[in-house]
Image (cartoon, rainbow, N blue to C red; front, top):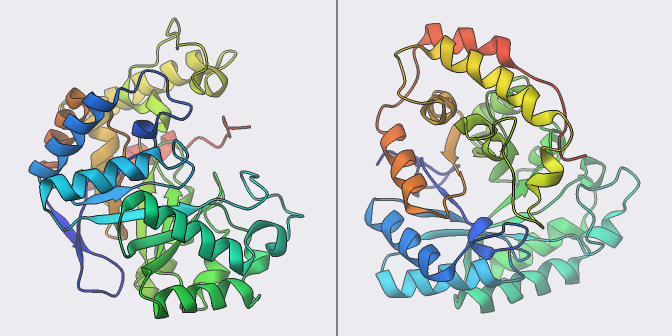
Length: 322
């Protein structure tokens, strides 16, 4: 396992992290706790030490699983969580105020709820689950961070940036209070390379790349005839002719990769690991076969400059979440 320094600290986190939304069961149909526990244990045994969760992932269920995992393994894990906006609106609407989204008391109480779920005294990295940079100059969120750090309840603080809005957080980063950004970044959405990644490198802010497989599209498993269980959010994400659009593009991506990678999923992961600014990539891994595949893919490191240049042509501006 390869490790990278987190932000300005001495902490080393695994470049392959574990996205723990799926194990929380919310909106992902088919997750099984016994299987989730086996995969989480296998991840730790394989060197993964970075686990990303949120208070709303199963309304605390994901966090509780991670708390159990840390105690059962006896390992000192780097665990994150996220504070949901008080108004429960994702992404943050442009007209949303800080007062209705992240008042100071809500930030602190949500963090304390996560601590109880994790059965921990502190969270390694706490994050705003949405953000609007027009709040950057407000004092209330800053006061909450100062208090949580002073009380030893949070070590680092970050922003989980709104879907497909990688620049919406840079102003907050200029305050010096933001240690990391979690952002959608993959072969289709290459927009973080424009401004966010250079800003983070200059300011020693960690980048956590989420949705590396575009909800499964960049694994090659989403075909025109693919179906999902009732209640699975991917029915909405891949509605209409979106599966056909995806399938057409991913065939061309694998053709471009040629023999440099063994699979489309490997291409997608190694693409992200090729960027110096990316600290960790956090695919969801509910099943052992996916964990093992991701572990194998990350062993091969960065892609060649030639392939990285070819992949620029697959930049695809769209928002399937809307």
